[in-house]
Image 1 (cartoon, one colour):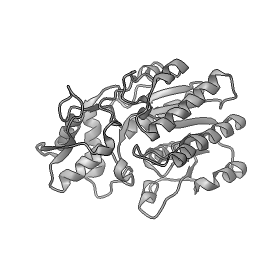
Image 2 (cartoon, helix red, strand yellow):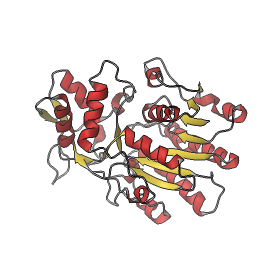
Image 3 (tube, one colour):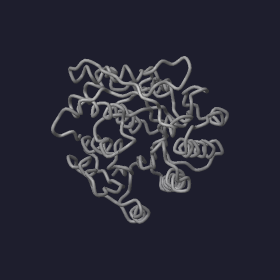
Image 4 (cartoon, rainbow, N blue to C red):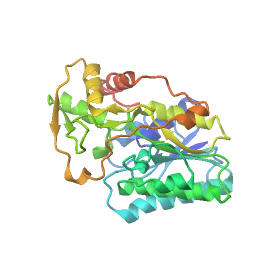
Length: 326
């Protein structure tokens, strides 16, 4: 039995789909709410759903677990409630870590590329205290994820009891099916696709950084299939633990991304540039690119899909279909 927290969410539901397809029993911890989030799970066999506030009771009385895959979090980069965000992303995560350590259950959790801040110290998934101390996240969300990474790294370095396997996954800019409930945090691929379908030109932010042209801000855009592939790999490597970047290792500009979307749709690119909202200035990452050396050295090679093929797959296989869900 696997437990996936945030299992009805974007990355979580894709993990549930993969584990179910592999023949595993999967328990989901999440809220479905009153929108269509349930559709993220509708095509897949699950063992059940437990509400987050009932998780402690489930862990006490439920069946033995092979692993906890902890994707549940407040993931809005614009989050402002410091107490709630820290309680959710740090304190609750730490409780799960301790439970897994005491019960001998493997623990895989979602960190974030937001922990790298503006990238001035690079994007290498080094878990030494010296390396982690240099990172300065630009927002509350990134800081809570970074604080948890540092706490885990510190406990491991001090020899505290740990789960038999643990992995913190620093996800870069993830896109793909089942993200439709995410509101303002939905991927650029889906946002730009929707603009084009409304008959508008794709809108991109003007650059707020000297030396970077409009639309040439770059990110490591990663299809959710790569994230699922990495987790599947880690589950086959019970002796492999640590912090790991999850990206492609290649940065592409927002202009490149929009062009790939237009190409997938069979249309000629049209772009309008708009001013960056005030609330994003000072906390906007103009460049991210995952250093994938560590995970690849361990034997993971990703899905092999190119940037253009990955964008095309999402657009044509999901966004352009009557049923967009995996």
